[in-house]
Image 1: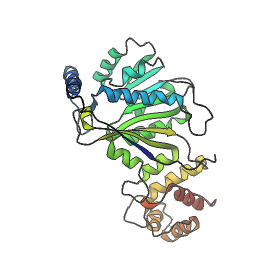
Image 2: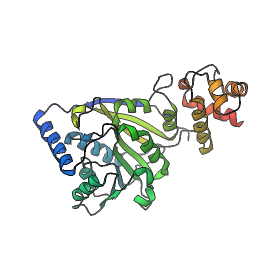
Image 3: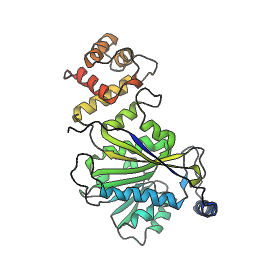
Image 4: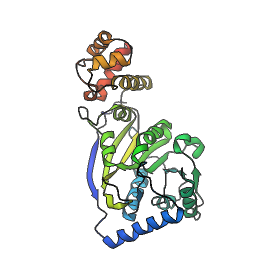
Amino acid sequence: MNRPAPSFTSKATSVTAGSVARRETRATTGVAGTLRALDVRPSRRLGQNFLSDPRVAERIAALALEGDDAAAPGASAPPAPGPILEIGPGLGALTEHLAASGRPFVAVELDLRLAEHVESLLRPYPNARVVRGDILDQGLDALLPGSEPVTVVANLPYVITSPAIAWVLEQGPRVTRAALMTQREVAQRLAAKPGTKEHGSFTVFLALHAALRIEFRVSPGAFHPRPDVDSVVFTVIPRPYPGTTAAERSAVERIVRAATGGRRKTLANSLGHGLDIGAEKARAVLTRAGVDPGRRAETVSVEEWIAVARAEGGTG
């Protein structure tokens, strides 16, 4: 592919949950009452915050469904509408909006009490079902057999954001779009630029396999219990990094993991130690790649990591 490298952009749009105070109060009270009835106590340790603003739910669902009108990177036409997979539906704030589309719909929920509740919401929708279990233990082809393109939707607790995104990308080309929400700080790390403290190995991994775009901000008042920080809705479009092979991307992942073990170390030292090749050989690889061996790993761009992988493999 000869497309330019993807850029991370932000639409800088804000959704506020306090403009209609009584509506917010009713929504939050409903969520709190449902949680009490189900004997579910949100875990602060796990970052559980249940979406309670129906306006935000409608907007996220519309974002997920409007993906039908957009072609994926490198495609000449948008894919036909395919199944929807929701990860962790919780109390179903998004679920009914998605199931009402009429497309095949599967929600995967780990908490058995929440799964039963969502099953009751889905009874009117014959194309929808709930799978009880951990999404990380599931395979897409078992959840949604067939070859149709799949859209993934989720409100992700911050502690499982990276594993859930990695799972999405591991499912292969069937996942054409993911509309996700997580804490703002987590999303900023995912889209971090080289040279910032947020830029790390998972940032590089994501850039190798997908394009990410920040869509809009969601204020703490849209959740129960109310978190201390803003959240962000973002889209992930899986695609291989332009101009790379699968072997090169795998090599970059291995090298980045080896080089990012110590942020205070120079590239030569961290790469030499991580790859067990010694600092001198690491300097030679970095020099062939055109990367200063004295730099820190967090300052290296994806393009530079690719050059390092090619130099280490003898193709640079």
